[in-house]
Length: 235
Image (cartoon, helix red, strand yellow):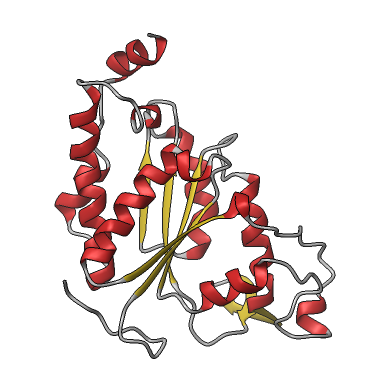
């Protein structure tokens, strides 16, 4: 496969998924994440899939020790040490989560809160918007993966608004997500066709950090009509 030079000093592009589903490896979200990483790996990238539910990550308490007393180092010494190093060492990070109450899971939110240590206590302004300055020179590019068990796109509106502050280079939002792990002769080929687009998206993102319009259409296509889907999940 192809290899792509990254800005971390290594030969391979590094693509890391931080998976916030409480179901971890057995989640619908992970079906999408694995397909994305397969495509990235086929493009020559080094890939890793982290299940945050299995990690010991203390809640951020807003003490700002990581800003003022020990810059970049949290007061809590837990699994976030290795995860932060992995985050910093990645060219592309993917935040993956099912929709819980229109938003990301608490599992993923807890991880993102602890990324506060990469910021510094210097306020910056861009076009009237204020934020804290990044404490590291280069942040990874961000991809969002999320699935919802409901039809339609309205369940991702809050997710999109929250995640847009990360300036994602790609957002993969999959409605009708309960189909992803169904063992049905009718459903399996539909899901496999969809996952082929996810895999291609992973390949293109790892190759050029952009996705072609035909792949975007495939990612946003309906797996089933709303009527068909409701019929399936009602049994």
